[in-house]
Length: 567
DNA sequence: GCCGTTTTCGGCCCGACTGTTTTCAGTCG
Image 1 (cartoon, protein in one colour):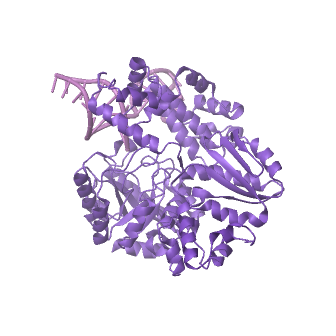
Image 2: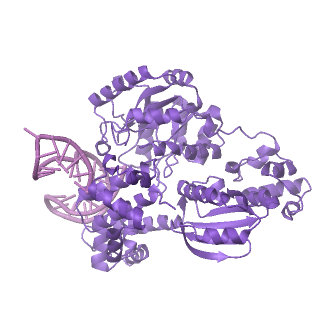
Image 3: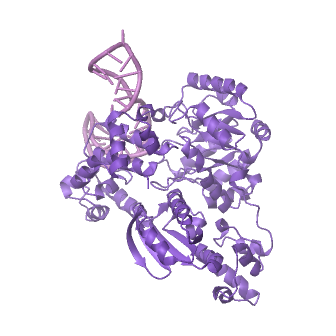
């Protein structure tokens, strides 16, 4: 089986991390990181590009990196990386991923104290051995202890998108086997929880042994952790555990139902049944055959409850009263209102993005590149912005049944001002305002800062409102209740950012927003064509937040949306 | 590392914040 583009990208990211630790030239490291970003953003499999000898056409890939890609695709690994892995202790990259720790500090801890792991660093900090090192103090020591504690809490959790990537691939693969009748991912993956512990797969088959034998040899698998008559647990090369349960076809739906959970949802159902004089055990004994989950819920006297709702957040009560909301679906989304292009830090042109959006069946997109103060992301000067908007207007004239909205993702400066003059914002179709700097402001300052953006009449949407990054950092210190109230008062839209490491607003906060009557935009914040496909993750957050199509602005047809934005 | 080019080597990377300092190195987006 071919390597996924993402897997090749991971190799270059790791190479960049290790070279950074070694103090290699900044620009070389940046070139590797850029190449990794480009590769993972390519929709076409790398093998095909390689076979045509077209690396030279891919921006950011030169002769040297092209040769390395070929080496990876041929041998499965990169010699240069293997050598570095031998040279640098494996825990170092993880230490460097802690907030506030870069290559210099990691090297300092390693050279002066022999620290090579997160645990070792934790011990050194607790023994107060870091504070006397140059550039360190008691505060730094405490930060490290705190950050390691946060890190350990999410240890072993995987981003939903990574889990779905692997689950989808394994599902497709298993379905090609002759005796496999049905396959579904269960558990937290099926409930679209933002991070998951492992992947549960339920497989309906008449020949479990054959399925196990074949899956054990799948190229993504590393080792067998457990194998019994009906269960196979595997460690994958991606570091994700896959737990496969095989069942006869007639028990598939029931097993999927129990496996999907959540525990809290099932417990609540059990209580509900008790009040009706029934018992869950009657279900569990498997004497009744259900062909799908709809029938199971029907048997319980309830309408079907979507997997995303099964968290015991009132869904059983609502189902009993027949008042479950009509959940938004991916097909309801008519456009993407947060996209970056080559004008700032994106990889594609406006034309390419528009073409992809039309292929996806959208009616519109908004081009929202960064504003002038975000220099590192190539933020647009006012002149460039004007030029870009002019280009968009001229592109629009050639479009039929598709609209490109002029837009900007403007910075909310530390004082709460928007990094773009009002007269320009006024003439821009869609203005997103986001925080990209001074993340450590205190709660009061940060709350006032965001509210000040909400109150700006030219701001349509607040982008990634809490700023959390699932893989790296908590959100900024924000009184979200006040932010929601201000948004409701000012009719400012809040974003569900679909980027898998953001998912911001999250499900709980998006639901609170809905309760206050705030409108939501589900956007990808894509920087390349492939990541325009991440809309499904934002939609899953909305569904977990009980949002209906009417709660989401980008379910509106183009004309209605434009009218809505001009209000 | 890649890119562009007055084809062969120079440019690419900016500014703010933090904690440690007492003028700055390291980190981050």
